[in-house]
Image (tube, rainbow, N blue to C red; front, side, top):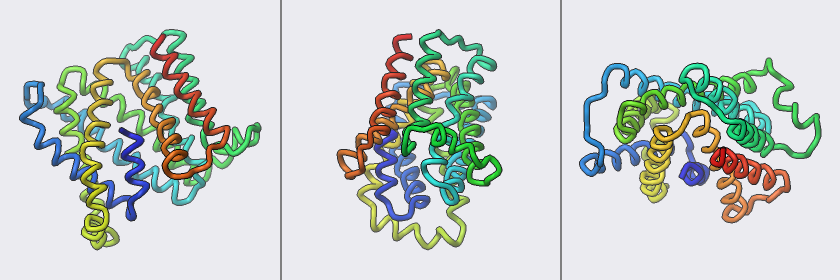
Length: 276
């Protein structure tokens, strides 16, 4: 589902405005589904609200930093650096949440991280491996590294939040707060005039995006409630493999050997995590 809604974003014209409409569609569907939820509603306690707010702020900042990094940096440099959250999340999980990782689990995490890092490499060489870190003083690189770090903080806030609160209602409030924060951004003059034209042009994609994004959010938060966050965040990178296959099969993108190997490495890492 994560790969599918990224595909919808790729097909849109004005990405920031389209993502805002996706959240509008998703929240609307969430609101209609509230009476059908199997979980009993209880008002969130102040600590749960804090975790919701922290997660929402982190994920909105992640998208903003991601966009800033891509504006000034190459995809092959920025993409792997934005995935560095997978390095921090197991550290936070062990140090802050008391999670314990098996040897096979650690091996699986390393495999997934290696696949996510290498998928944008253009050739196999030491020079290519270290290229993303070559310009640590550059603002695009710094923004990408900050995005990865902030995403890891948001993941921990989510994990703590769904421990003692319904993942369904936690996700609902998370989407609501993120939509509110993104709405402030869309009040800027450069975006206001694009809101209605984007709806008129891509209303079909926006309608499709509602259930897709809702399913993506819900399944991951229920997954966080069932497994250590140290495993859940790396396993989610299987969406990268699905995204590669969608690009090859439906968008006519080149199927380089490095991309296919990296995608299979991510899948193998997820299997090892599951077995471990």
